[in-house]
Image 1 (cartoon, rainbow, N blue to C red):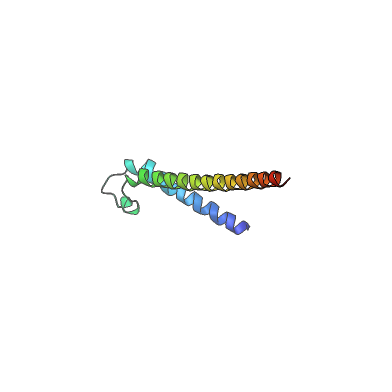
Image 2: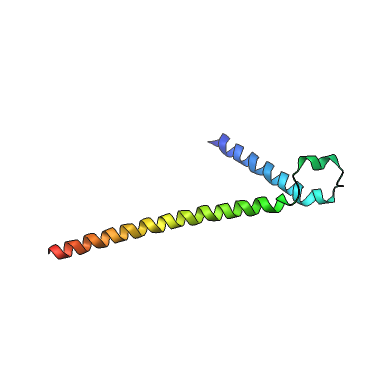
Length: 89
């Protein structure tokens, strides 16, 4: 379990350093420099986080919607069972 956590920390640190270098340092490097070959065009520095945020919001919204639907179904079933119990009595 510790090795999994360490691997996740290394990956997160690597992604953070790569993105930080790409967005904050590369604009100051000459356009013809070979270092630019290691990074995609800068327009993707905005597009990638926006896509990730939209996907994350969609997943969270879908999860909350499913939880609310299931909760309402349970409440409706409980109300029906209570109403059926009162009619018999």
